[in-house]
Image 1 (cartoon, one colour):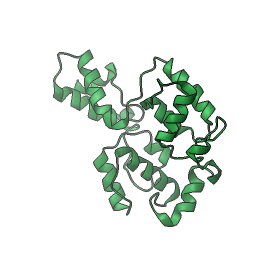
Image 2 (cartoon, helix red, strand yellow):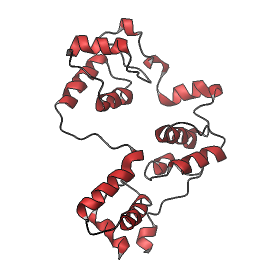
Image 3 (cartoon, one colour):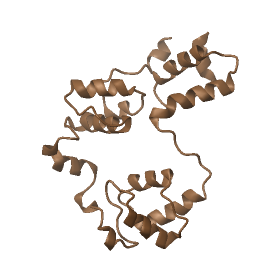
Image 4 (cartoon, helix red, strand yellow):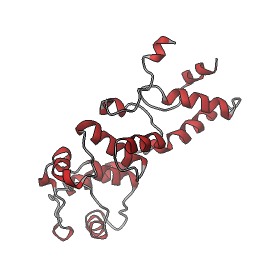
Length: 204
């Protein structure tokens, strides 16, 4: 019991380190309560709330405060990564921050890749996660993703549903209450929130 407590989920407070925050699962309501208590914006998706909290834990400042725009730019990427005008896109152009899947960019990729091009979820995530890369890099990544059989990563807000599904695939004799009890135990621990056979020990 004591060994398990060493991995117990920490309290969400302004003293929590961002790297520790990333290791645990928090409900959206918990994130909103934290933002409200710290005077941060409470609207947006769960991912946006998490990004807002990580920035706050790292800097002590609000990501949405227009007065700290310069600090926000310096914190993320240099201003030189500004996205190019779509009409000026070349293969060596930088993707830039906050990539948007606009019609002009769709036309560019269709011209380079072919009419079968689509902004699929995995490719969109790659584009947003690689602001330093070029459009040529993006085209290469698109082909690699097309040839990959790797399943898309499940966003945090859907991890509960995935856990419950995996639980019953492995335990058709258990109840929903059993599954929820295991889930609550799992999300309190450090690390991933995927179902494992060892989770059943909490039912003993």
